[in-house]
Amino acid sequence: MRLVIVGAGFAGMYAALSAARLREIQGVSPEQLEIALVAPEPTLVVRPRLYERKPETLTAPLLDVLEAIDVSYVQGIAETVDTKSSMVKIATVKGTKKTLSYDRLVVTTGSRLFRPNIPGLAKHGFSVDSLEDAITLDKHLHGLAKRPARNGRDTVVVAGGGFTGIEAATEMPARLREILGTSARPRVIIVERNTSIAPDMGAGPRPIIEEALGKLGVEARLGAGVASLDKSGVTLSSGEHIETETVIWAAGIRAAPLTTQIPAERDSFGRLLVDRCLQVTGVQGVFAAGDAARAACDDEGNYALMSCQHATRMGAFAGNNAAAELLGLATRPYHQKTYVTCLDLGEAGALFTRGWERNVEMVGDVAKKTKREINTVWIYPPRAERAAALASADPERVTDL
Ligand SMILES: Cc1cc2nc3c(=O)[nH]c(=O)nc-3n(C[C@H](O)[C@H](O)[C@H](O)COP(=O)(O)OP(=O)(O)OC[C@H]3O[C@@H](n4cnc5c(N)ncnc54)[C@H](O)[C@@H]3O)c2cc1C
Image 1 (cartoon, rainbow, N blue to C red):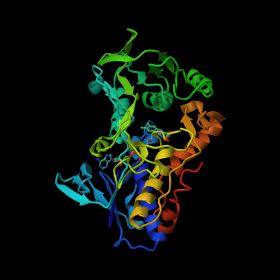
Image 2: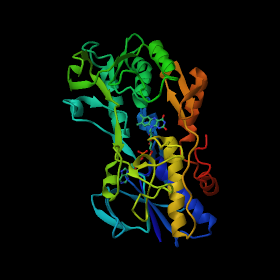
Image 3: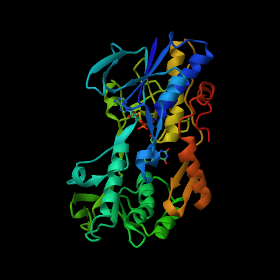
Image 4: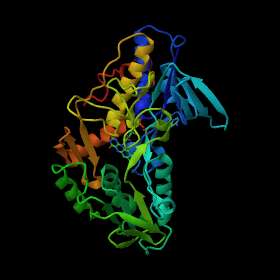
């Protein structure tokens, strides 16, 4: 029997750990139940940190952990999935193709930035969405130091005032000063279509975010969108033109394209609709988790967001359930009661909220300490030691904050 997991992000990592954990508990050998993980690289890209300096360092190796738990790694990109014949076609890095049959499949292919068809965006826009994009932005920022300080060189425009936009924007003043020298006067502007900053955060935490932006001198243009980009800068829907060499697009993500290969319903983000045990609705033998799935967290109408917090726990349930079906065991309904947010606010600290209504629990340096711990310890893979790694993947305990 073979369980195939596609994607080595937060959901895929925990799907592999959790499936291997159940296999071990049941005393089943890797020969009887093979668990294979397909991904272009055997590394975890620590996406939540990609707005930071030195983005090239923001990955963690996975091969040693996978080896420790007897999960085989298949290098490549899954191009097609045939759910009738239960086959995944994979393009390898060498340019060859191979097929892998599965008895159960877990789709954990995550998400990617959605770039709308705005004139100049593809050519002039930067992002912090993928490792490659973050490295390109970092090289560009370092390149600015060699150019004359005119034509908006020291201005960064961040399109999108949601979580990612705010984290990228609040990090930028310090990053620019580090690169351009302490005498530089960086100007950072967030452009947000909605009439308030952090539209999803709600009224409670917003004053803290606004205060932080004020403290850092980050400006906001609200109720305006990006209309076009060119080499002189960005023009907003309000008609304002901002001179800049750096526009960071942080306005919207979609599920990665592999989800279109599964003959099932998807939401407006491209996420596969799944049942309570994370099986794709109406597709026997296929599970989905993380940013690739739209899953109910509880019976109160809350749905998992595209976040690490949800991806890790969903991954643990999906891996467990896919293995459980193959081992003739009962599956477990995914549930995630606790919901917290921890928003980095650069040199102005951080903001920690609890609950779907986002009650502010910590701000400033105290919240920043928690953010650092989340971003440097909690979201990293467990150490490559079999017992500890397997123990870390009990679905009932993963991301139980
Ligand atoms: C700048 C930034 C800041 C963020 N901040 C936070 C935060 O503070 N808190 C938080 O909870 N979340 C945050 N997020 C969101 C979080 O990173 C995502 O929700 C999380 O990465 C989702 O995990 P995942 O495993 O579903 O997908 P991903 O982490 O996207 O991993 C997907 C994996 O699938 C692989 N893959 C994709 N397609 C294929 C294919 N066809 N074949 C094989 N492999 C494939 C990819 O290579 C990757 O290994 C942030 C994201 C960004 C970009």
